Image (cartoon, rainbow, N blue to C red; front, side):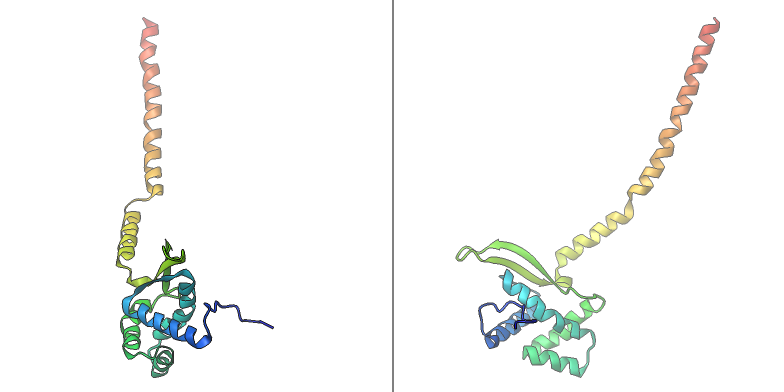
Amino acid sequence: MRHNKKFNHLSRKSAHRDAMLANMTISLIMHKRIVTTLAKAKALRVYAEPLINKTKDDTTANRRLVFKHLQNKEAVKELFSTVAAKVADRPGGYTRILKLGNRLGDNAKTCFIELVDFNEAMLEAKNQEKAAAKKSTRRSRKKAAAPAAEAPAPAAEAAAPAEEAPKTEE
């Protein structure tokens, strides 16, 4: 029976698959963004996010667990120093997959996979949107415009009959 054997095998034997995912995780940690196929990116996300989650608690045991998977001192050092500081308050979802299109040679779907808190352009755009949202809201403009629009209308109606009244008396 195939219970709980649902992950993508990526047409590789288990040793090759584990080595490939470990190398891709090291590249992702060191470069913060890599280009790969969509299937590999989805498999990498499942492999890398639990390792990134272990960095929230910087203990010797967690460092050894991560090193057991990655076998790279520099990557572990980078992960526990710079990456851990940025993901400390994030409750999960440490990677983002952005689809690019199909590759020319074999028409494979390609994508970026990146660490979420390290994309400076998206972070700046998000901060600008927050600042714009704080400056004005629909609710305050609607309330301010409604009384101003209602007030002049009765005054104009009251003035019009007053002008007509003297004309009828003459």
